[in-house]
Image 1 (tube, rainbow, N blue to C red):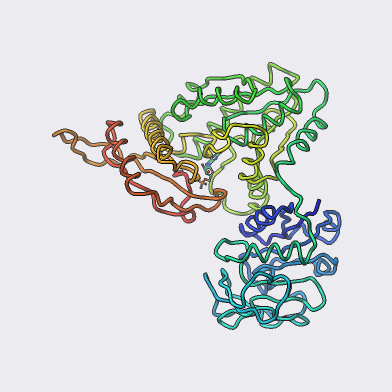
Image 2: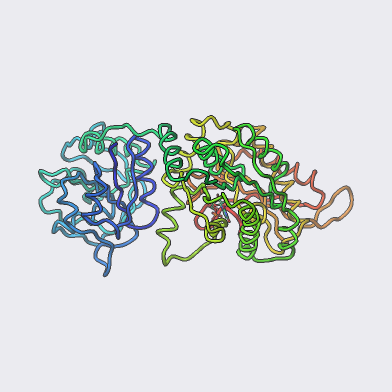
Length: 508
Ligand code: XMP
């Protein structure tokens, strides 16, 4: 199988590149620049290398760099933005600080090359750079931007390219054409990778690692990641799968029944533990969301520990960790922790189990495709992501059961209305949030003071960035009316219109 290694220079640029390469049918992996040694690369044996963009300047002290011998491995290389500048610098060129180019920019092809097959003489691309390549020794300039900067070059006589723009973003309309040209025409890769073919391999891998008589615990939530994980484990070890579904009292309306029904549809009979009271009594009155996450994580661990202690054959924990989780936690060293998302991350150490992560190389949309290939119903596969701590992260301020019930009811209304209008699947997440602020209302002829409920509906590819969804006004109106009519304690509904960043998706 052909493989492309994307060398990452920080930020989230590398993910998008890796996704686009996989979408073209070639398997790709991200390697942080700190690990990209010539030896490691020889071991990985890629058909091509792509150097990603990144937030730094090549001439800063300690700017991220790579061993120049990587360019001598004989493997085709494409440098994008920072990668483009870094190659130029490593080959003895000059990178300087310029006026910068941001957003849609016109480039002109000045020398025809196979990477630009399918491009007109002038095309729009997406730029985001302040530094620029002032001199590329031994390279031919292939394209120039409307501001006179080098937009693309090729090192003479070698399959090494640099592009200043971002071919991986949708705002570069011909970007995918360029990436495909690089993969297939320059690197001679073959498009043979399909996530659908992976199921058998993942099942065999689990079977090989789990010893005879050993059982595998999977904490199922009803979401796509844990369901796909459980189905893979089930196929691998049959009845030695122990699927456990814990109801922490923070689920959406009717969710527990729905999850049980869906798991049974895919042949999984989970151990169902209703621990609602245990969780809710500990959360009552807690203000800080991180503290709630900690309490929930700890309580989860205790519940699972009780399960594991009763059955010594349980030796493994299979988790639905996906690729962004793996890369984010690796890359986040030293970075500010925004939220402690992985409420079950501590489970393996608590439980003393060995860990299986069959989805650790897959993106969410790939997990979904794998789910479809495994025969998991679409209703499960296309369910919106739902945080592990559930509705606890959708109550701002003091946690009370009253506010919990308000978000539970309101979220149900949001989802129902979107489904009725055929909009559910087109958005990433859609829910309601409540805090402590109050708004004066008139209900009947009486003055009443009620809660403000905020509706958050977002579009996203991987939750790392998000945009608020431009839902038709009539649909928002329907949601707002139903909430104030059906939930007596609510007098005002607002719609959240801030992207991520600067806001996060969940309120806390
Ligand atoms: P934020 O709010 O950080 O969320 O933009 C990004 C994605 O992560 C989900 N999320 C969580 N998932 N435990 C989880 O398992 C958590 O504590 C948690 N907090 C946020 C959120 O729903 C979104 O999809």
